[in-house]
Length: 411
Ligand SMILES: *Cc1c(COP(=O)(O)O)cnc(C)c1O
Image 1 (spheres, rainbow, N blue to C red):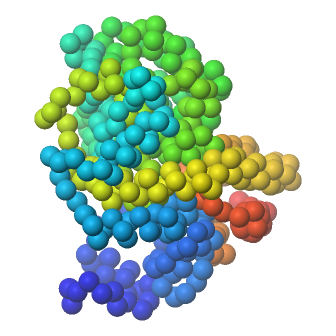
Image 2 (spheres, rainbow, N blue to C red):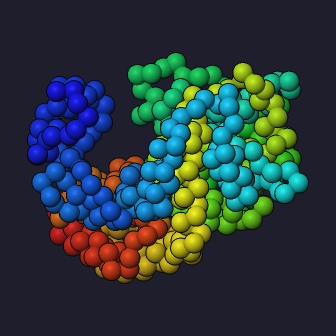
Image 3 (cartoon, rainbow, N blue to C red):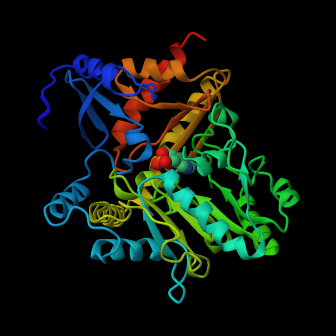
């Protein structure tokens, strides 16, 4: 029965199908999701879950944001895909919108290369940095311990966490690792062969690690002094999550990168990735040097435009800061109540980390039983990437569930 209509009535049928036909490279919860709206998502049995981690950070506007749904519906009946051998208005419009909200100026606007994922955007950034440094013998990429940049080979090599490398060696040559949030360590390794420094403004998978306020501006200065490019991986922090379009903008131009990557929330949940580069850097990429077949397709670009429109018209950058403060005050109170269980609360807009003194995976499964979806990362960190559209009422409802779980947990 290979027709396009779906017929399963229970999660179990789908789970059995996966067991036979889908490669088991993910740890999945035994739940089949069928529908979502805002911060709610429903499974095949009709249970309704409160989602504090919609789409692993991709659904920054919640499930099925209306403007994105409308834009995609309209575009899909007009033109689904054409190759990058043609011009298409949605790609140009989205590139301009991103450029105007990120790097460069009116005289020298930042320029976009579109792709479909975070790994692909970082792969493009690493290739661009290498191409840019090539004439000067600069090829090394400095990356940070605890970072995460994706699963393709160069992005994986840049991911300085041994657990992700095991079994896939040898890695790509030319990568150098230093501790995160340590400017002196970067200064020590930069040399005449260094092409770029690659860093997340806040480490996401690494545990919601927020560097000191001098770190990003310090990296910018160091890179300028040593003739090295600064690449910011904003795949997770990007497009509105931290109260700014991009997290580096908290520091204004003092932390503006030469190359910026974004994916996850870029197009309201539709697959999309982008590398934005200063025009003077981007110009080394000539036709034929890099490409992505689906990159910048009209559906993703229309979805991206609708995402920007939603964030702007609904004032969601400011709202993101208010949501963050609400989470912070709830969890700081809880930390004072449970100091032996909660080590630290780390919040930037709708990026929230609760550093626990014990493994967080049981907290995730206990919350699931109580119909609250959260995430654990780096072993002991509860990570929440809630939607910018979540109401105060739902924040309080979910925080109360999580607080009960943390109080009651036997550790
Ligand atoms: C998720 C993530 C990636 C990888 O993105 P994919 O779309 O899964 O390839 C890269 N960098 C950061 C910071 C991420 O959070």
